[in-house]
Image (cartoon, rainbow, N blue to C red; front, top):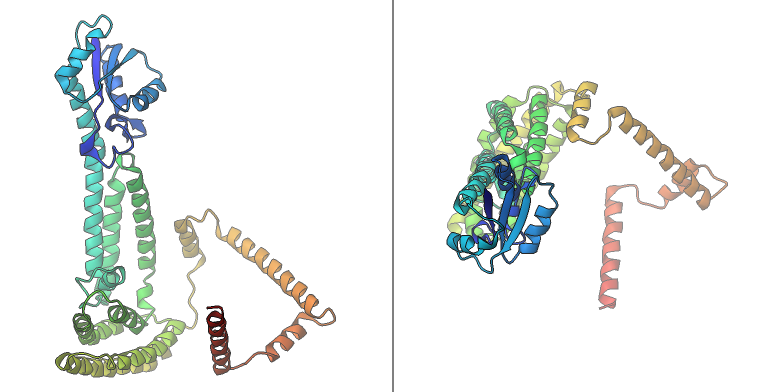
Length: 419
């Protein structure tokens, strides 16, 4: 008995996968799908096989000939994909052909395997990615604004303790679902995407488990970032963008109250930064009033800004008077958690390796400093050379800023002079 396999045609319905290869050569579990058909025939006791090849015949012939087959394989050229009947007709020269496996049956084997092992798994993966992504944007509207998806521009993230706890549960749930996807049945790019998603979810779960959201009261810095994006990105008319800004400003009181309730272990440094962020955010809020708008929108914006400033000042006082006095002066991740973090980062190093590397870099850096100091003045110590250098530079920030401005002006003059 002889077997006949179709491996011609152009595979147009499987593009873009078939732009550069025959559909029968698409790899599934690191093996061309054509090989499964050959193996099925051999397993059925058929050791004389004819393979119909088309315009890309060399690609098919070279690939098949690389295999070690317990069968005699002949290649039959078909000038154009003219259907199953034509392939049977041109196969009459297949040596001692007595009976051919109907080509459509072999095609069904290909399509079923391909669909079952590749496209269904890829489709399931894409569906899961879309579901997870849409949920993430909905729960984190600031992320949506940042990446240019503006359907939630009038929303603020929910800052309640319950939301952060639920975030951890959601990440664990999706981690299980992404792990259930069979990576061997995914396309190469999806394999990489799956690895990245799993990596980020594991990191997210780890940080969520540390409950750092109980320690950091710096919420107004985030407000400023997502409002600034709406102001400076010209993706819609200014009035439309500012309406979203206004709606976000109107939601600030609720967000600040939720933040107060979730902070239970304030870390001193972050608490001090939160106080400074309030001041910076107020400066930003005041600047919004300078934007030219239609009178009705302008009036609403000014009112929203006024209320937001009052709310932020109240929050600043709460942080300063309630959280700061009971804040933790020193925060430590702990060796065990740090070991876990290094492992999750997949750096290929342990904490002791990183410490030794840091010490080596420090020794090298100190040597470079001493060498540089000797070049400047071989008769002085490093500390003396540093003192001389420091004396030639401004000590206060205003002086540094003035020097910076002067350097920028000099650079500008240079560029103009060179046209």
